[in-house]
Length: 254
Ligand SMILES: C[S@@+](CC[C@H](N)C(=O)[O-])C[C@H]1O[C@@H](n2cnc3c(N)ncnc32)[C@H](O)[C@@H]1O
Image 1 (tube, rainbow, N blue to C red):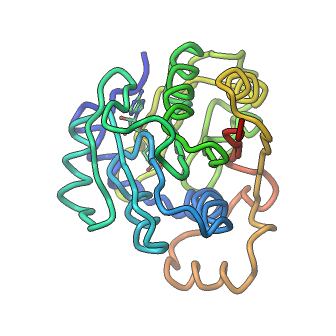
Image 2: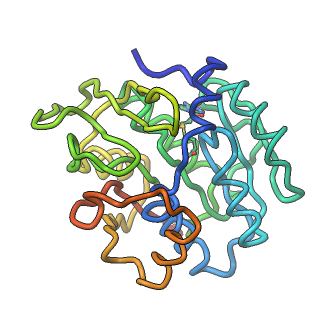
């Protein structure tokens, strides 16, 4: 059974999670990808959750964000807490982006959505729908926990049981540590990197590139600044092992 982000208790707990590690080794690389192309004026955030990522992107870049999620609870948190003139939040059903026309959006991201998706067919369906709305030549960036870093204890989460080898599509637990609270246990699915490549290709995307940053890829000055702001936070295995994988791809110009 996958995690239901439609439950209020799960949505609120996810909102309470401090995503400092995702910001440091995940979102910054996703944003850099969009910022490296100044022509991008709009980005789809598929599975926006409580809107933290959309809000940071809109604030940092002025890009217009279409932020969509299938969970009403998540969209409620996002609209209440993270209103921004450049963000349009939408509740969607059955993976349809019916409010967006073909070839209309300048970029897209899906952060921690596919690890929450039980079937390969559904992942493919979502990728095809994202492909439909993207303009030819546009970037699609996926950010998920790294399937090669299961069982490693990171400072804020652990993805899978230590020492266990997971099969493609196998159910896998993830423990998100939340200050002064019990962990939020997510019921994810294990998708090897080859599955992302296979499905992206089947959906029509090309030029797939995978990034797996560790703290060694972050300038010292920036790490110092983060630690000054969050002195309670202590990095662990993220110096050696990449907690996340970032899959960049392009909808080709025909
Ligand atoms: C782990 S949360 C990540 C939220 C956000 N992207 C972030 O990084 O903070 C996953 C979100 O994806 C949404 N989601 C999962 N499958 C979806 C689907 N098929 N269509 C739309 N939203 C989906 C969930 O409701 C949830 O809000």
